[in-house]
Image 1 (tube, rainbow, N blue to C red):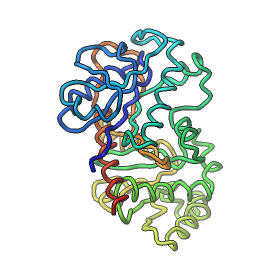
Image 2 (image 1 turned 180 degrees about the vertical axis):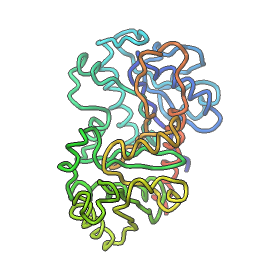
Image 3 (image 1 turned 90 degrees about the vertical axis):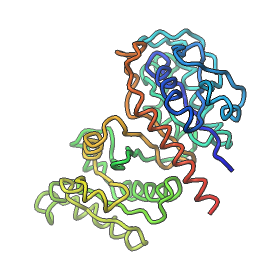
Image 4 (image 1 turned 90 degrees about the horizontal axis):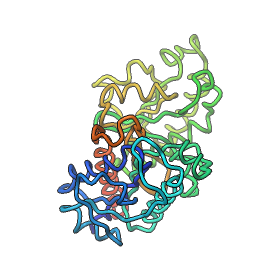
Length: 328
């Protein structure tokens, strides 16, 4: 049984999402199947599109036109200028994509970028971002952000907080949950039977026995010891400055890092355009391009579709892996 098509949300229609949807279709039309959920009137019109009434129709439509599951918005789209009347439509499209995926009509959700302020101003959106809203829709308490490319997979244990706040936020419970979610999703969604994890230390040289900070010795190491005792293949805490060269990367399937830049600098240095944002811990697959709405270039046919294309490709690979795990 082949996987259902991927649901691509339109994101903020004033951003580069509509343009990227068309460019992604042109690149992938003979490779895989996805459909866009959004208002067809917001598309640039540089590529053919066809309205569908059911996700299953996308399979036949895909080779000839971008399949669009129409969701009409209240306002027009103006490149670079969010329209408040469209905010609720953006939110509803995300919910629709989740519903279709949870029901099996779509195999994964790939989300185009949203603009949080536009959603808050236009529809009272109360979530910090995409990820928190998806977790709410799925009814889960904790999710994990992964950045993935062919070169590297990284997971930051803490994300958008000041560096000075990281030691307090890095609790044994939160670190353990982050590692467990990563391990479980590498198995169930990436098809890696025995994931190998490398865990970075917080301090230089992983604290060097407590001489450069005690968090590695007193917080991180005990968590890793417990998880190793449970059978996980984990290395660390490791000195972060020796984790990301080519030979080191061959020894693990994902790197758990202690803060935002420790994780994102290496992957963006190695593979800037192809990095994909993956949300782990959801009961469905979610990927997203690793960039924002890019209002400054919206409507100018300048947006690079590479990250969106890779996000759709990774979603398809994960869907196939998940189907293989489920049928095994």
